Length: 130
Length: 257
Image (cartoon, rainbow over all chains, first blue to last red):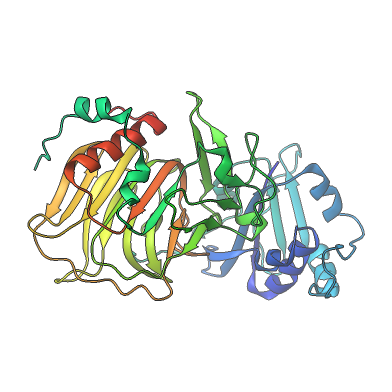
């Protein structure tokens, strides 16, 4: 299932820790890119990927340090905070899609990524030409 | 300006022609080919091959022989491999965080970029599809601006030059050639000259530069798009070579020239 996530700067670092905990390696500490904002101009960081169903289960289960993290690169306390801030919506739910909120890690699953970000109330920050 | 080479001639020659010849003179650059499974991997170490529709692409080996392999170490930022309705393989960039990059600190003056491509959603101003740049600074690019595909070159003797190519959502083989002499900047879409300019190119200093596919750099200019193939070459191709390359990419992407 295609998952699309958004998080503001207040918990960005924690969200990166969670992404790495559920990810494949230390490079996943760099998950989330800039370039999006809400209606008030608050900057949000985003990511989108095709996730195995086990990812959704793991994101809502007790977190464990991945076996590849032999140097304790991940701050598991931060990952835990991000998990508590997680709002997960998937296309099979009858609830309305969540909007991106300050202090929340919002994840929408099952719809195209740019549609998901629009549903969260986010737009791309205007870019200059190259 | 019409470069004057009929596509039938190029097609006839295609049987004997291979894009590898474009690099045989020692030109730098990259040839990225989604149709060649031997060059596609799900991990940056190159141990897990891409084998099925929807697989992530973490590493795309450069077929030019120059070793400018495009990679993405962050799992969420990897594009995915698919085939289109005609069975033609392509790589899909989500327009959110996907990007492939290859270090490319090769100073040069002349260049040719060409790619088979289609935008999946009209892009915003400044979205980058394919090219070479240093951080936020563009050098040679095919990019998007308000739903259009454009060619871009900096530096040249009079500053930046930029030209409309086509609507972004049009399946297209887009080309930018920067060469010596008159009409040094040539932009082409689907085998047709769109624009050219007679002012001179200047050497590009590319310390710290990268080849980018799918975005300007991580977090900027991400473009929702499909790629059937892309070439970057540090020389101006001849008119005949240009027709051969465009015919090759048209065949890969299902474009009718």
